[in-house]
Amino acid sequence: MKRFAFIMLLMPLALGAQELRVLSGGAAKSLVDPLARSFRQAKVEVRYQPMGPLADSLAQGAEVDLVIVTEETLPRLERQNLVRRGAKPIARVGIGVAVNEKAPTPDISTVEAFRRTLLAAKSVVYIDPKVGTSGKHVAEVLERLGIAAEVNAKARLAQGGYIVEPVGRGEIELGIHQISEILPVKGVKLVGPLPPELQKYTTYVAAPVAQSRLVLDFIDYLTGPEARASLGQAGYTAPQ
Image (cartoon, rainbow, N blue to C red; front, side, top):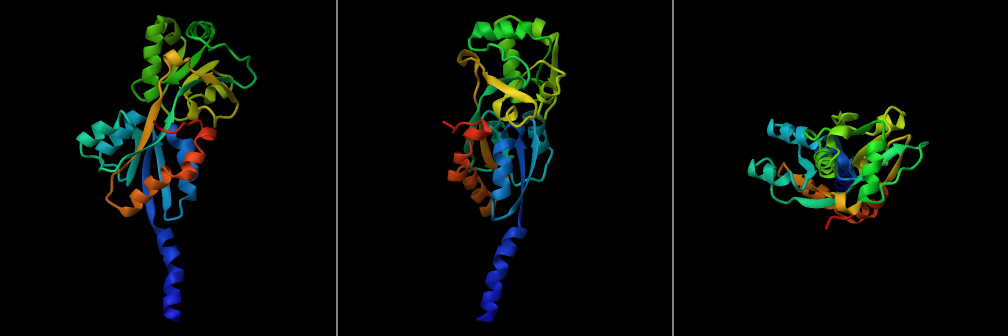
């Protein structure tokens, strides 16, 4: 009986000693980080990269147990046999506009108002279209509005991370990025999402790389009630 009790006491320690390695797109960070900390079955180590470098890392043999990628990226990884079956959507996020918290709030309520705001801004930052999901869409929007040359002449193309941090430091006037990567940044305020006609929502999915019950349990956790309850405050909506 004593031996049985001793084994039962050790079981949580054994479970806690397990580790999950996750490679995720940066826009999922404010959702995934707290869930990784609260997952009780294992220690979860998460690394974040823009979508382009993430796919390259996986193709080059990065040792991970699961990935969190855009819905658009998943089919390519599946074709390359880099992920297993069992992927599930976890969250959806749109693109927004940020300015310094002390700056006046510009008008982006309509397509024309957003166009005027972009032309009036002294400097703009968005992620390099070759690197990040939102950057590709922003570049397409600028072309659609007929102001790509004017805006890109004063734009900084960031390579990853919280790209609106220079806006918070007062170095750049206006930032355009995934809303979930604007809200956590000190010194900035979210003006709002892009006008509906220009908006692009990106759905993130969790996909297993390793064949493990623990991996599938964590994916279930990322799509469970606790995760869904935290979507709004982190800048996401439920996947459709």
